[in-house]
Length: 389
Ligand code: RFL
Image (cartoon, rainbow, N blue to C red; front, top):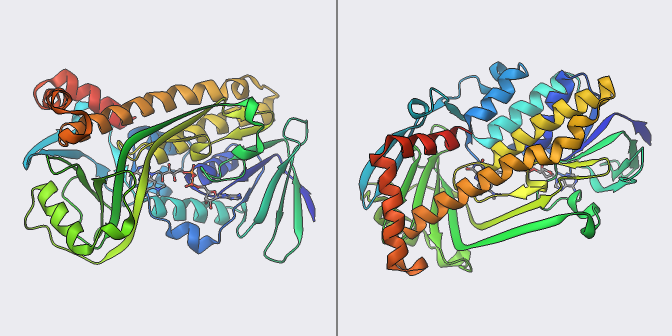
């Protein structure tokens, strides 16, 4: 079965769905192919904050009202050091640039709803997705549908939005891209639990190791616990989780709750340059992954989608490919800036607690850096500027 379109979007995560919706607004024809089923995609719980820059993207394209309705502003951040709370009012410190607290699965479900109700072509359960002729004038994407038939979609451009483990990046010859990869040398054990969310997103630094608690909707929290990079999941019994959280968060009264999901998150960063090969453009996690520290992964996906939507609109409607030529360099500026922010925050919050990581001298340096955030308005503003995106 053959059809043709202007853009095939591979993957329906935050990157692919943002791009698909922006393309519809830009009057650019697209088809989205997604390997998983709709309920799986809508149930994937990961990020929880859309930064200010992300909210601006959806405002500019007229999607913010539908997407962000009822989602509270992201205001205060608490950094607790040895049980002592410090609060940073991010919007107040960044001239009112507030993000929104929105669980990733809510954003994804709303993006799907808007796209499909608007007549968008979104194909779930697409198996064996393959990209062809990326360095030619008319690439193709093939997949096997749930009906067992092989479908072929000819197009002008392919947007590879299929995440770190997707097929898009691996379709590019290895010599055509430079890969940057960094292992942060720590592990993060994370659980999603039915525990009332903290009043404010909370980072906790102590000699027991780093921990964090973030809101995930009205009745749930995502917790992170620093651990050894090679730590096995089954080393974390429920009892150990709650004991360590109470100790590290400095909160003896933290209630235990049912744990829905537990994973060890890779504290690894990865970037490819360029984010383009011929008519393929890599977007979001397909091109770069970042540690969850600073909450920038989903936001970078939205930022890339925005740059690409503008560039594709100019190419399709005006025959102007200058923005497409600049796509990779434009995105990578922000990617590296966020990578630096995430690494800086990771290093500071982990080394300030656990002296075993980098020694006592670096622990004191990290504490001095942290302390500056609470005593220097300029330092707090620089931090808030990066948080706002
Ligand atoms: P996604 O979300 O991985 O979506 C890719 C989509 O492509 C589909 N796919 C394919 N489709 C067709 N053919 C194939 N061959 C395919 N292979 C894959 C997949 O099914 C999926 O639907 O990438 P995208 O869109 O670039 O979005 C990136 C974000 O999801 C990611 O950066 C964040 O979730 C990262 N992240 C966090 N980001 C934040 O901004 N703040 C956070 O607090 C935060 N916490 C997290 C996170 C990621 C986590 N994990 C496990 C990866 C917490 C966790 C636990």
